[in-house]
Image (cartoon, rainbow, N blue to C red; front, side):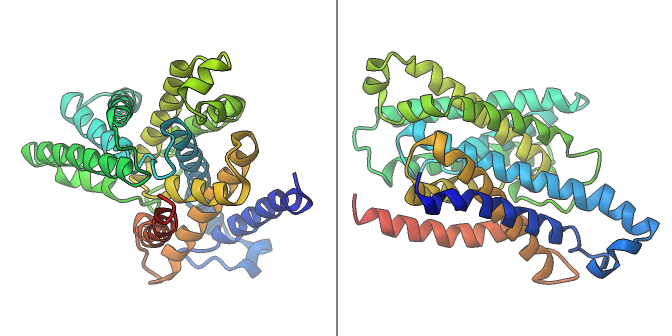
Length: 322
């Protein structure tokens, strides 16, 4: 590790803490930073019930989705594959929709389990399909994933119209943290063990990224690690979509930026990926809250605009070497 990279991690952590602190004071209700020592009861209630849960949700979603993107890129051996471009998020949305239709009075965990199963199956189908493609272009494989995701999304739309629950589906089409309050976001905590397990198995995911033959020659059970990765990705996608809706591009652009700066060793890059993902999502959330203040635009829209531009830059940069 170079001297410069030694200071980057503390700097990112410090930046995240500063951004997190200031984000608590941004919102429709005017809570001034200068009044921090004399907050009234209503201000404390708003911070405790709304602002802090929202902040925690953003941080966990940022950590989880970025790390998930990093893992799936190693598994798929493609830098442009992510939960967004392999249909996982669309499958999660379909799973939630079907769970509402089939189990209308079921608990949140039942719906989560059903949605998780659909997301996992879709991820496996995509990887199986991608492995059969002879022309494994850097750009072609994720395009197949986007088509696959659109098919799943079309199926979800069909069922939404058939059972007159289009409004339910629209809530998951685009990410929005404005509805997060104490008591309805705690399911996101399931993404924390995912990040921890990802770090424990980081070296094995790195080996998987070298290819199946190399992994087997090093004594690694390639299929087992791949399925573990898909399991972790599906859990994260499910809890994030259930809580805040679909957040596109996050698992795509952050791992690519980290990879360009620090390489492909997951043990080294995973902390940077998690921190940058949380910082990026937090900045997008703050922009969403101030750009048309006192109103707010969904964070998914902000992430789509900024992430879409960054994605195009990455594509144009990478395509030169394809």
